[in-house]
Length: 198
Image 1 (cartoon, rainbow, N blue to C red):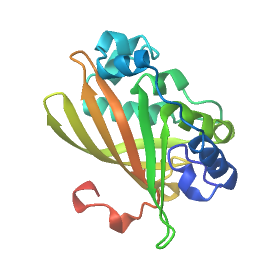
Image 2 (image 1 turned 60 degrees about the horizontal axis):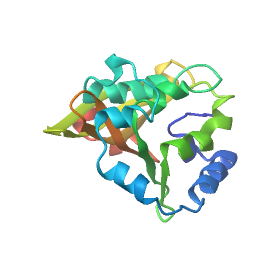
Image 3 (image 1 turned 90 degrees about the vertical axis):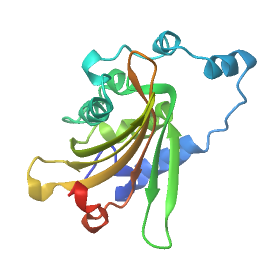
């Protein structure tokens, strides 16, 4: 069974899909006035107080931060490098997936903390190797859109690996980059990847 951290949800793993659905079904409460004010007017310093300290080299550029995402979730069976992973995202950053067989398309969206809860058990028994390949960055001031591909699988042999396609939206606070959201194609096929990314 291929248990890939970022795309395992799309690989037909019933237990993991159930965990994701459970997390997605949690009722959201309305934010307090204090929480709303904090979200509307957060400085980089205030944001940094709510997440683990990042590695400086992970957040220096759009390409560096998406590369760090996949490094943080790669490795032998055991927990992710949770702190490194969380340090890349805004405190309420979103993770999503879209795709499926024709007629069975679905969309998944979770906060980072919910996604971690959903995949935690599966990750304990999975070997994951994800490597960022080609990256396209579109930046305008303090925002950036990053479309990129990565290979994924349990082993390092090329024949054992598949391709993943991701899209991340980033923001810059004057000192570092943050991932605001990340989505991926749940059913990546080689013929769906744009020529410039092959």
